[in-house]
Length: 115
Image (cartoon, rainbow, N blue to C red):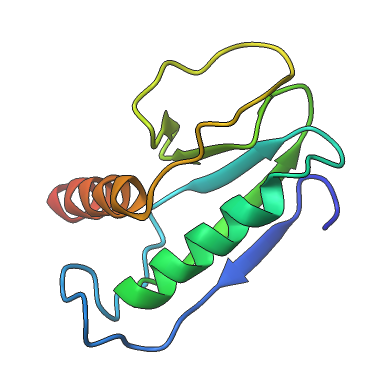
């Protein structure tokens, strides 16, 4: 993936999770921050893909390569793990869980609907 590129992640409707099913979320900003050649970023992408597939939510994910704690998943600028966003490149071993991703997506979706 080219640095700074967007890739659309779409998923078919999933019957197992009705909290976000079938919504296109234009107001939800999803970013994966990572250093070049991070060995953990593909695992995070897979986890995010799986969560989006189960929720049926359609979002565009921005892939941002640079000097970041890597990998970091941001939804509307917030780290989905709830930890403060650190500065500078480092290896993160605390990948978010599917539940943390769902909670962050649900919070972002609720916020964007209320605006």
